[in-house]
Image (cartoon, rainbow, N blue to C red; front, side):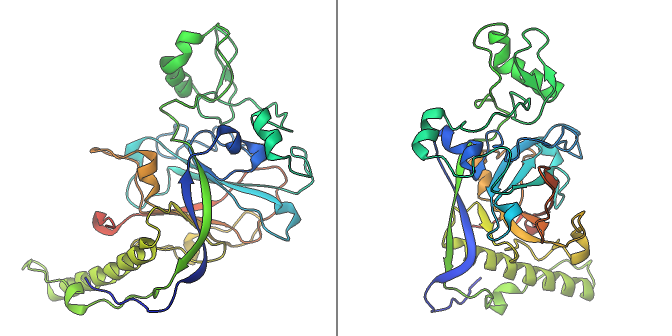
Length: 357
């Protein structure tokens, strides 16, 4: 399939692209207001965290794992001086069915500059590095040692570690706690080497620069399909040909826009438009629920398929998979105090498993 490209020079599109990088542990702690992938969540508000029931997969009823968070303050809105969006993902491969979002969760947390948890002026990097990143945080929230989410279940032997669920206690017991229970080595820290957690990275951003056209000119002879199934009537064949042509254009647009920066794992443009991977299963306005405050939700960012490579979740059997995950948030970014407000996520997969190359 051939496509024509614009001869114009590259220019910024208004989209911020996200990439993963290695980082020191202290840089990914809450006082640094990080954007990050994997590991445990760096909670923003230190109170009113999501409960276990909020973080449970709607399919298998098991706790979801922290996938990523995006620090996205809104300039000029005092209640959103600090603002982070958190995405959680079920790790049960069979839960990840085509174009189904039930095994993902999204939450928004935001704080004013003057709040109960962080100093008004940010600390120096040198101070944070020396303290291990824990400056000004004296949270008494009990967090699961395995996943970093709120937990109330203590080990019945040592009472030194907390878990969010029996499932996570069992995983950690087999992985490490059995060897250290009732010893000084037992701590309440998250086990960063646990197989339950995704690999941890910092999420860094840079402006997208793109000089091509958004709309591709696709050669007709390459786009048209030539079906040979005699069992299909003429109308069905025409519908199939039309759909495949439309989807080919969408996929080619996706390839063109991502080819300049193929390692992008995230695209951010609050109030903008997502880059779809297929012409099918796009949400209509009625598919996107309004925020409980009454405001509409609009696009804020999307997670790209490249992240799956960094997460190392490929499998010959069922596996965690997506074409893109599109996050919609309250257009007003309403003030809900210290609460973690659920937002909406839409999952779109490639048409007929057609992956970009």
